[in-house]
Image (cartoon, rainbow, N blue to C red; front, top):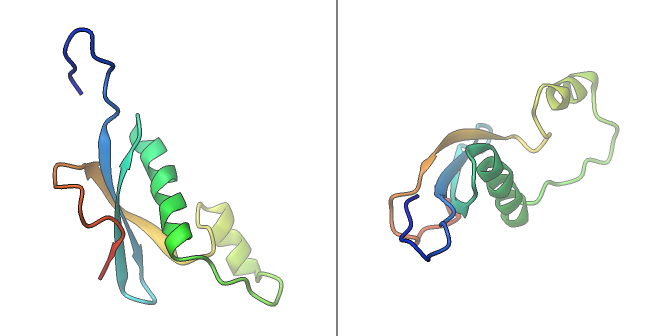
Length: 96
């Protein structure tokens, strides 16, 4: 983002959306982060704060462990969309 001389550079604002297929829910978050990868991490932190994972009372199955190795985290939420946040700051954590 451009800044005027004498002003500190602004951190870009990103809109990150996560989707849960089993619950058919979409959660979106506006986060400040220098890169898209950092925005995903910040968005996932916000997501898990609002929708904490329910701990299972058993050991994960082989399929569940393979999903986690492949980038899943066992919660069912997956990254759906990420892009620059050009909308108003309201609506963070919107779940449909």
